Image 1 (cartoon, helix red, strand yellow):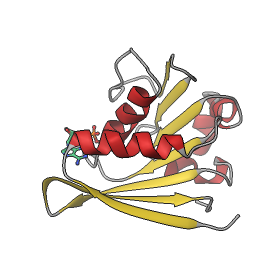
Image 2 (cartoon, helix red, strand yellow; image 1 turned 30 degrees about the horizontal axis):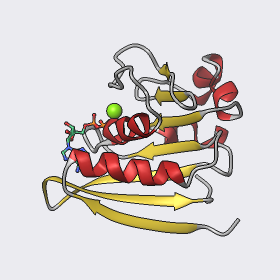
Image 3 (cartoon, helix red, strand yellow; image 1 turned 90 degrees about the vertical axis):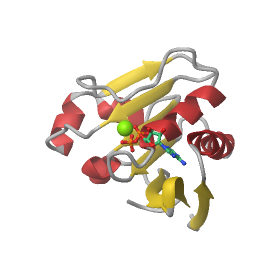
Image 4 (cartoon, helix red, strand yellow; image 1 turned 90 degrees about the horizontal axis):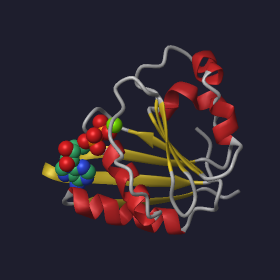
Length: 146
Ligand code: ADP
Ligand code: MG
């Protein structure tokens, strides 16, 4: 598949939500979104935008102990945060491959920790701090490899 890259700048968390909604519209069901970026970059904020677009009612936050949260929406939203994961094997032990190749939308923070497990169709989203406290540069890579 040919790889395309899209890059935008958002100026508030709300703008990041709206952009996530746009990305979701272009994502096939069963799609996997790998989120990259430092702590505080806005990965969870982006997942909140996905949740809104899917009509999820439960709160999406940064899980302290849970690594996988499932939310009911127009399709299921699996929110995975691998910050505390030690290895890809540990993620496999948690059943991550069922999510990667199952239904619903799967959004994974710190996805580079399981780079070897991600399907080739994974969409990569990288968030970086911009020029101002509420500015973020968001780059989306469609159809590439990790
Ligand atoms: P991460 O999951 O990458 O650690 P979070 O989404 O939990 O980051 O936190 C991002 C923080 O930055 C939130 O407090 C959010 O309100 C704030 N923020 C400010 N501007 C933006 C923006 N443009 N996009 C996303 N988050 C933003
Ligand atoms: Mg987070």
